[in-house]
Length: 546
Image (tube, rainbow, N blue to C red):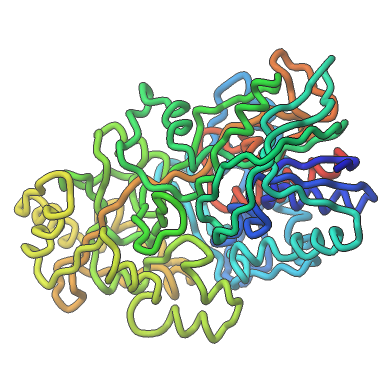
């Protein structure tokens, strides 16, 4: 199994890198510990959102964007504050340039298309030079995650048929042979075949081993989100508070981070491993595929957010505004969950669920399916299914019954009088056009954007208005997802050893490299930068190794 370049990991970053190498006449071998059914990795399960800058989609929605504005948003969010952030900062600049120039025309030429309404994710809700997207930038790909993967998968499979690329599925790399500052080869275990459905946990039965001599290796093995032990070990509990004792997983079990540990043991440098991205609006999947399977709510701005005891969270801990601030707030309070309280009118307009399988209309890339799901009676079928079958939903016609249901499934007893007082205080601000409530102001701002007014933000109304009911409470869990740190690389994706020396022939891209450089998000992320980061860093790694 010899090739010019060996890629460890068959996810999006690895496929993009392989595509670049094949275009340059290189032979490629892709190794992955999972089977062929998991080709494409985590990207398959995604909503397919890409952060792009100053696009035709934005301009059609009357959104004016620029590289300067996006740079201000990114750097204000990242807040790079460490000596080792030099290359991550350079990767951020490189991605922003790519997202404002080559990204859309290149992907469009490959066949990608995008939903015409641009989403407004991670709005910030704080200061102009702080965290958040000032404007909508979240471009949902027609076909969602599978639509992002499609052009690369098609080209890779064609290259396999042509004999230019080989796969080594069920090949788990455990060791890198690095000598005299140069990669010499890789070795590991051959795992027993397993025909489990995509995403399901597979066996780890060893049936053989392998040793491949290779002078160029690209690590695109992903992060640690499916390995709760590694997540907790790397999380800075002293600074941010301990992660909840119960979490759900937004990624399959094979996202285990073990390749990162193997690379570090062989002499590669990992940086910013304490930086990670976990969502705070997680649901227990009533129809799970992988262990502890969690689904994230993509919320509009109107649901009221309370901690486990029934105390309203402060701004900027608002739905869809500042994930990291909300995560830190929940951890510091020491609770395992939090709550949304909302109405049927809000859930119909504002609730979406992350993931290709939760959005079959967008995944189908058919307008008739989108119109039927998004503009029909009730919420989308996926949301209504969670409301009916999910363990985290309470639906009631009156407030007392709602709170009784929350107390039945929650970890703390909520005082109904205290909760009602907070809801009534918020409701009173609906009649006040000079509102002082930050969330009410945010709702009005959201509806100034045509896309939100049409599809994502309910008309302001009182939570306790019986004509807008029934009332709904949703128990929210922390859902593990992305690794923001990783293998330390320069702008050619070449991996550093501790001390600043490049390991000749070793590259890293995607989440394994913190999406570029070892952490190009810094301390915070803007959304659409995970898939985008895999594409950008995989492209640079493939071109550098080619």
